[in-house]
Amino acid sequence: MTRTAHRFAVAVGALALVAASVGAASPAAAVNGTITGTVTSESSALPIQNVVAEVWTLSGTWVNESTTDASGQFQVSVPPGDYHIQFSTIVTPAFVPEWSGDVLFESDATTVTVSDGGTAVADAALESGKTISGSIMSPSSQPGYFVVQAFAWDATGGVWSRFAVDSVIATPSMTAYTLQRLSSKVEYRLLFSYDCSVLPCIPLGATWYDGASSLGDALDVAAGSTDIDATLSPIPIDRIAGADRFETAALLADEFDPAEVDTVYLSNGLNFPDALSAAPAAAITGAPLLLTAPDFLPETVADSLEALDPERVVITGTEASVSAAVEDAVADLLPGATIDRLGGADRFETSRLVIADAFPTGATELWVATGYVFADALSAAPVAGRDGAPVLLVNGPATTLDASTAAFIEDLGVTTVRIAGGTPSVSAALESAIDALPGVSVVRYAGSDRYDTSRAINQNGWDDNARVFLASGLTFPDALAGSALAGGLPAPLYIVPGTCVTPGVLSGVLMKRPSSITVLGGPTTVSPAAENLTSC
Image (cartoon, rainbow, N blue to C red; front, side, top):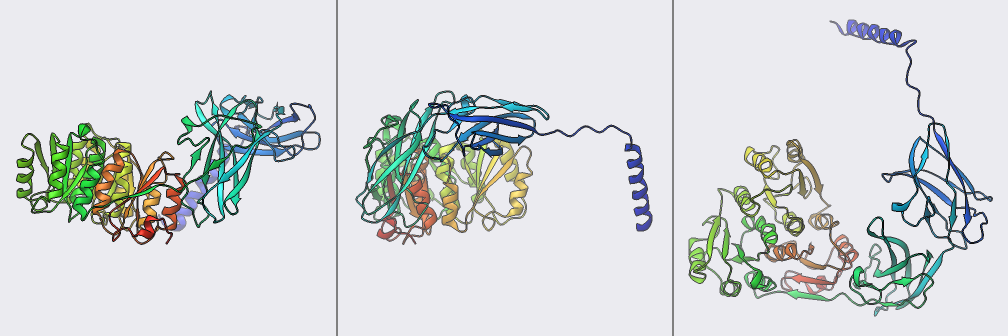
């Protein structure tokens, strides 16, 4: 058929379809309905102007909003459906934000149903808001941004819900705050912190009222309270560093309780590939990761093995990576221990062997990182250890997924693959190939460079007030041994350039309100300036 004939045939077919549809009944389009109501003061019953009535679906999608007029009335057009309405205002005097049904939390909200073209009424009576006030003090004479947050217990939802926030500028070392629009029907727990979304940051630790380290230990504060003060102190910073990489790893192993250590991983401390997959495997089993010279067992490492006295030692890599002489030295040192070697034909097979050993029942979640660069895998290892997931090394630049890796992912039972690093590390083609595996979805965590990728990987999932680790992103040994400890605690590990802390990482660290920061390695790998959180 010629192109002209084809166009003619399509046109005739289209006309036939139109003709066939003439006179046929088509379903009527849904007609928007209306939600209307009057908002008054709970205490005076007088109407309130400028109250915003926001309409939300039950799944949490914003639909539309309207503002009350001088008579307190509002009217908003919405499609037919079930909704919750939130009422809030910034007028003076301030009123407490409420949900439909005159309740404080959405979990208790009354559902408003709008029929096709119908009208639903949702009146509200708002409680007059009270305040909590006080002062924030810090040892710094530098102006900064401080944040006070009030959390209230949502009994129906079973969660602590953030109810109010106040951001204030401290000048120079003390500032007053006022939390507004608070209800007298609940009590609050207050968190005081420094806002690092605006740099330069001041490394001050967060605190709950009154000096508590966690929400569960914080004191309840009633609306209307005054003189609720807090003092923010510098975040405690310590350093774990030995004379060399082997001693640093041994010092990190000292952080483990020998009574709880059954297994120790031992990897080549001069070359990273065989050890990258061992870190999350060690974390999930509560095992330290020690580093060794390829041809001999350093004295500090031998001392650590004797102190830990594990039942099992797992050597990662073939004899080309960790020699038979090292294995024999471990056997002589620990005659009652089982020594297993996990080494494949290349770094990728070794990675699969380590994972198969540590995750015998499989894993539904898997991190993937390139086996040619260490930085992304080091940042991902503690996150993977926290979540009980392995880190699999792949041929990142490849444009296809090799059969062995594909089969391994499927055999593990993986449903979610998280890629550490951007497309220069793990190609877009490889991502597509993994995503094409049956039942597998892929999420990528990437930044503008290795440090921003570290920030992106650590952005979610960590509790506030946790310990945070910092290690060099230019060398691997300290972060490698540290990632096993961090993943087991669990605690995030960020990589830094060594001479400073990048703004993104600095903000990410301080926004987590860490209870302490531990620097890994000596001052030649992470400088005193970086230790003191000096921004790049």
